[in-house]
Image 1 (cartoon, helix red, strand yellow):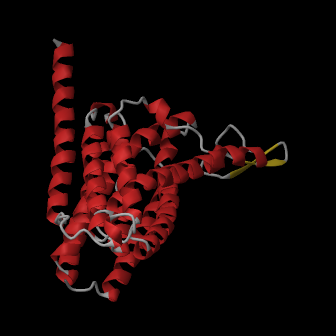
Image 2 (cartoon, helix red, strand yellow):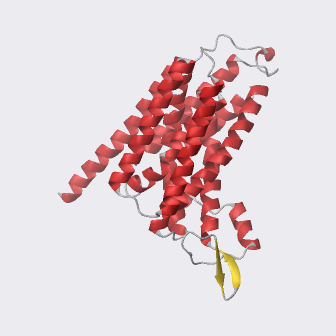
Image 3 (tube, one colour):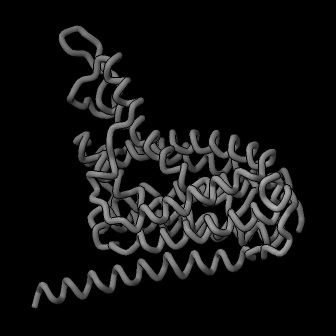
Length: 328
């Protein structure tokens, strides 16, 4: 396997940064509710870019990193779709004007990206030094998979986190929006608008989701560059998915089952890898268990595609059947 050239990594990060800056600028300049055509065009563009990027990784670094990227990107993208349920609730709870929601999502996702980047660096450093952390990651993902199998209403999934609750105690925040402004004046007194709270809520809430998604992708690759770029490409298409699927999320009733299968599989894979490189003294005397098989990356990719694609297909088919029965 070839090592990913530094120049390629630098150029990639610069291009991805440019995508975010241009996206933020366009949303700030012309805030609007994107049409279905615009959403589809953006999603197709970002998906195509992810596929091209994977091909470039294959060319510069070999097939293994490329398959790891595709596996990680599909996993992160699928988990991001699940996150949209909570994003819809947040927008509703804070009564964000619909024409401002695209702009709000751009800022919130950018905050989330910065926080995830920090989280990835910390996670990479921990994994490099303490391989036994895979036992913890693996168990955590399996527990998360079990929780996904338990039906939950959207209202139960979102609660204002402690940071936002604390923020309200120390800052003067109005109930009314003033366009895209973070600050506004009332009777000569300066206030923060709800826009600040919405930005931070989206960013910190997405970071909470990262506690699921980051361990999951580290189960597919340990390369921080691959982990970060997979997260970036997943987040790039998230706001378009929000508007395209916002009214259709309830029809993806079985997506959580597909995600549960993926997370449980990766959890088991992490535990097997931890056993294969074991150093804990109370397991096999601190020696690795060489007899534990390693799951090839292509198998992981196949499981992800089948689980996510299958659950989405079943959801759409059953939703269509129920719609036909209702009309009948």
